[in-house]
Image 1 (tube, one colour):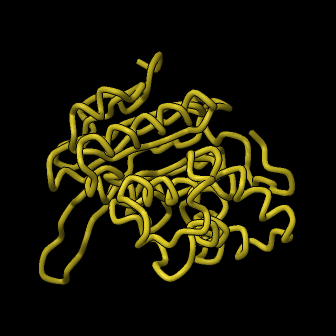
Image 2 (cartoon, rainbow, N blue to C red):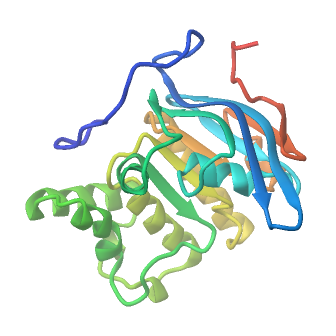
Length: 250
């Protein structure tokens, strides 16, 4: 669903294999951390494609490179080598201001710890990205109401996070992540702080958003949740072992 008033800056796919529905396209991604005394290679030649409308689970043991890869996908860090295109736009080499703009407008983040501001209401938490994005008051409020209804929290709009359950707080965080109608939703262990029932409910919400056309990449350590995704990508020792190129890509 398009959100009126927002435009996407994008270029045509940069290589012959690229397709118009590629949201994420990474080729030969390496990430090396240089401490000055030792170099640690966290990612070792990652090839990853996520297509529009996919619900993808990224799984792997601790230390496999999941968090490093998510930081690169989310433009929170940059690769040492390789190419990354987000909906056709080359990300590598962009300056800090442009990367910040991409994070704010084109990527929605959902965190394990919710990252809600505790002293303002659910409505105001969801409203924040729109406020910072300069959206007019009437459109902003209409969008927040739409999103809270979408995550089944219209009746909790005036409640502060401390007055909500863990599952409800994560729903507010998901609504906030969707506020700017991002190209992709990135969720890093979104059920990690929830009980089994609440975690299952959040995964059901992701499935519903997926059916509505939202592109979602979820990092999870829970195999039961991963199996509910449309596709599973396995990473180990900084390399993708399975699922990196998506269905039908060989």
